[in-house]
Amino acid sequence: MDPPEIICLGELLIDFCATVRDVSVGLATGFTKAPGGAPANVAVAAGRLGAAAGFIGVVGDDPFGQFLAETLWAEGVQTAQLHRLAEVKTPLAFVAVHSDGSGDFFFYHDAGLAPLRAELIDDSYVASAGALHFGSISRIQPGARAATDKARRIAAESGLIVSYDPNYRPRLWGGADEARRRIDEGFEGTTVAKISQEEWSFALGTEDFLAGAARLLDRGVKLVIRSEGAGGTSFATGRAEGHVEAFEVESVEFTGAGDAFTGAILAELVALAKAGAAPGELEADQLRRIIRRANAAGALTTTRPGAIPALPTAEELEAFLTARGE
Image 1 (cartoon, rainbow, N blue to C red):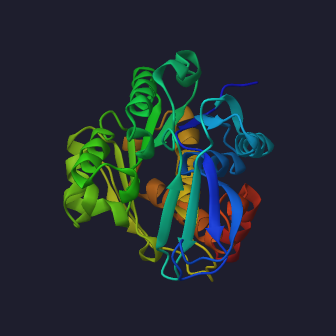
Image 2 (image 1 turned 45 degrees about the vertical axis):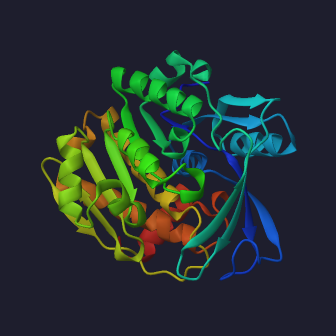
């Protein structure tokens, strides 16, 4: 098997999604089971768009872990570094989505959502890829944080694109100050920082895009992207900046849209890097094209329920863009 082009590291879990909107998790009367976890969603999203993807993570040696391993394998995501451990229970997330796109989350786990350990990271596997992607959930527990830091250090030393998408879920952290500190540490050594509108001010201390982006660029990040939902996407590098409008669609659910967006971004960036074009060297027009496609991938995902089931294929993405004259 060829080495993956994109490796995603972090949480893989079962989402139990409320069957009705605009209720809390506690008041929901029914749930549907779906595979989830943002890094895993990104791996599948990139794979469906033609990139070879692999996943590093831990699930339990239980029926839910088996289901998740089989799901990734069926999607073509390499699972050689997905560890099934008897001493761990596969994490579960109960999710209730509201009409405005916000959500109510409650998590069940016994060892963190991403129970990784540094000794589970295979140096040569990480170094063989073109990009490493991770989020902030794997920076909560000390063991997972050590594993994440080891992987991103190997990636940086091996010249990979290092992609980071911070995700703040207050119930998972010991407090806001701890969360902000650990999330901030994640930017070190990062090539591409993709941050949602919701996390922007928490992570960077400002609502202003250019001010926040400048802080990250000064720290060595090469490409800063802020996803703004229906408001589109803002981007900045050391040589270009701009904004790309979103697509208008009839949305039914927002789960996984940001992960579809990130997967599309990474698939494009890895392909360009192979041709010698690094993320920070891209021109504004190139970045607008990449982000326009990513916006389309995210929009398409909202038109269907679920996360992984809703992620678009390359053919679906091309048809969507063609229908809109792109």
